Every structure is written in C-alpha cells, then in structure tokens.
Image (cartoon, rainbow, N blue to C red; front, side):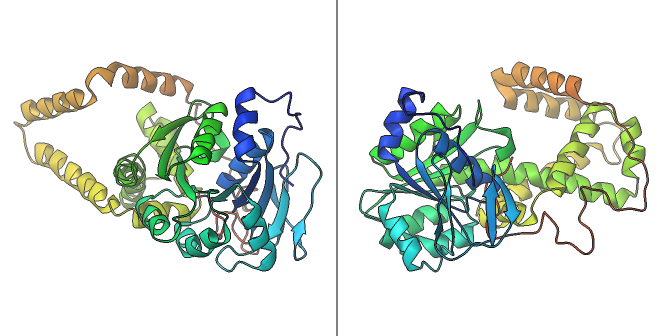
Length: 367
C-alpha cells in the first residue's frame, strides 16, 4: 500500500494537523496513478486516513503499482498506510458508496471523461459540506458539471503544473475553487504546507493559461519532432554536435515521447482554447518565414521582431535569460547509446504491454 511517514499527530506540523481535522477521511480515486499517488502519499503524511480507489487489478506498494489480484471490498492496511478498493467510479457499488458517504474529501485523479461521467453520482453519494476535488488539466467542463450536479458539496479543482515525480516543493498548483468553504480552503493550505504554491484562478482563466503553458508548449515540442523526422537527420548525429538549445529541445521531445499518449491528447483535445494556441504557433512560423525566406533585405525587420520579443518578456527578461544559462550549464555531455539487437530494458517488448499505454488511471497533470 501507499505509505506515509508514520509520524504521530504531535510530530506533524501544526498547519497539517489543523487542515486534516477538516479532511480526516479522504478517498483518492485513481490513487494508483502518478498524480493520485502523489496526493495520497502527502495526505497520509499529513495524518489523514486515505482510501485509494482504482479499477486496475493491482496493489500499491511504496507508491508503485504492482500487478496483483484484489478481492472485492476494501483491503485494509496498517496505520499510516492507504487502504485499497478496486472499483469503478462511474459505476459506484455499495462498498464504494459507503466510503464516499463517510469521506471529508473525494479527489478525482482520473482522465477528464471519467471525471465528467462520475460527477453526478459521486456528488449524490457524498454528504453535504464534504469536498469534491479533481486534478484535471482542463477546468471549464468539470466546473460546469459540478455547478449542475454538485450543489450541496464544496468543490475545488487542482492542477499540479509539474510532473508528479518532481514533487510539490516550490512548484505551482493551479487552483479553481467552484464552491468555496472551510474544506476547500484547508486543502489549499495543505498544498502550501507540502511546499506547493497554490495559485487561485477562475475556470476560464485556468484554461486560457493552460492553453499557453501546456498546449502551446507541447505543440511546439511535438512540431519540432515532426519537423526533425521530415528532415531525415539521425538523432545520434544531431546530438553529437548539438548546441545547448537543440540538446534541450531533444530532451523535451524525449520526455513527451516517453509519456502517456492519453495525457498529451487530453491537453490538446479537451481544452477548448488549445486550437487557438496551435493556430498562433503556426502563424508564428509563417511570420518568421516571411521575414527570412527569399529575402536579402529583412535583417532590420528581423531585429525589430526580436526587439518585440524582448518587450514581451519585459522586466523578467533577465530572470529567464539567467535561468536558461543555468539550465544549459547543467546539460550532460551526449553519450551515444551502444547498439544492440536486444530490446532496451526501458523499452516495451513486443510480448508485453507498453508501460506508456493509456489506462483508466492515467495522470491528468503533466509538466
């Protein structure tokens, strides 16, 4: 099972003790996934009782999903560890309904379509005043569903703007509070006690910013990869001579390509403002081409365009420039991987399911 740190109530920070008095019993749906596991672990460390709900026939050990058979009903666990219930949040059975009815917090760390399908019956099973939370990367549709079907409960959407493996410390967590109340505020204070920076936004504002920070960024990296494929240059050849900006782009491309396709698809397809971000990216490439292609007299306009980008960055130009210099200084020298006919230990074999295959508990937040 997912384990906390086994601290006693007296050992935990006073802030954590106060917040978990309001969030004593927590149900984390999709808690066997990366995002859900991150929240389950920290809730345990803060002293909450945690039930992980997941449809996968698996158990969770030290936060890692391991294949296994889970019998019907709740799998109990020692103090300081999460209990486990194999269940489908879109088809709530008696055991799950009972647990939801007792919970102070139900956290949906599931893909968007699963969360949208579950909201009505989850809210109906919750007691009035309990907190319904989600970790979706798009907030508009889930906020609308909550307003339509979950009027008796508090509700807040969280979007950790980082990969779960990086942890909360110093990182932003976008927070969309739909129905405010003491438990919603307690959850945001808990996130901050874990080291995160809770940034409160409206649902529309969240999706507008997510389109720029996630959809646009991922589209730029994916387009870079698709362009490399069209150029027909081997990545090993490129990496051997790559200057830091190109090496950084290769690293970003490798990170996304190694991820779960379902998650990146949701970022591009579910956010209604993502199409505008991709259109702006395409227009940016066309604008650059217009300054350069077939022109010998465009240097002045090109310089003016760079000046406009400096103006865009404004007073934060120096911070971001220096951050880039630090990142470049941390890049590792390229080491060509030895060729082998055997599959890599990190690559899925043809006889095994890919670890990157979409699953019902895929993380809903990404870097």
